Amino acid sequence: MMSNENNNNNSNNNNNNSDNRSITQSNPHEIITTTTSSSRRRPPQQNRLILPEETYQHTLSNIIRRNYYPSLPSLHRDIAILTHRSNGNVAGAVAVRRAARILQSHEESADKEENRRESEAVNGNSNGNGNGN
Image (cartoon, rainbow, N blue to C red; front, side, top):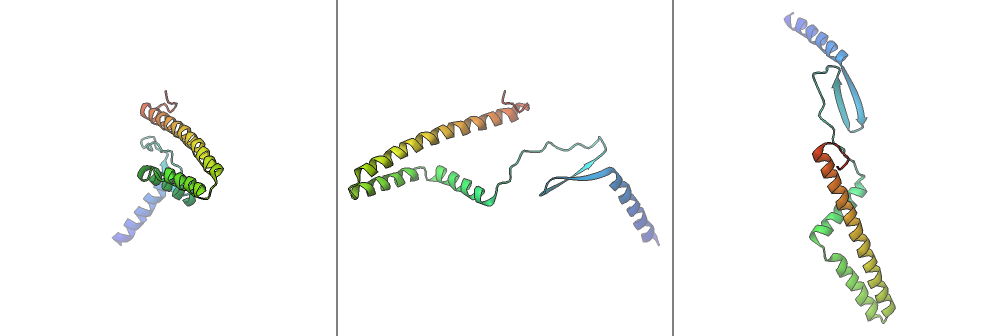
């Protein structure tokens, strides 16, 4: 009999608690329980981007290639140039070299832009105002 009374009390407590809580779902992978009480505050949410698997793998491959095999693009370029030269196609070899220079300048400018954005994000997060100043 005692256990029935405890169960009834627990169910009443659960009903009372459910009146004060609401469940919101802003992200399909995340359920956040909020209370109407002002005594509980949620920690600030981090801005996270969930990437598709294909994009994630491509980005991770590029990072690994950049960090662990930095000479790989120049080796591919050299192979292409030597292949054109061995076939007697000097114009093709020159075109590959020009394309490699253009690609390198674009990559350098993209890297500078990415570094600028990262430093703005870090500076914005460190002082709490989010505008990079």
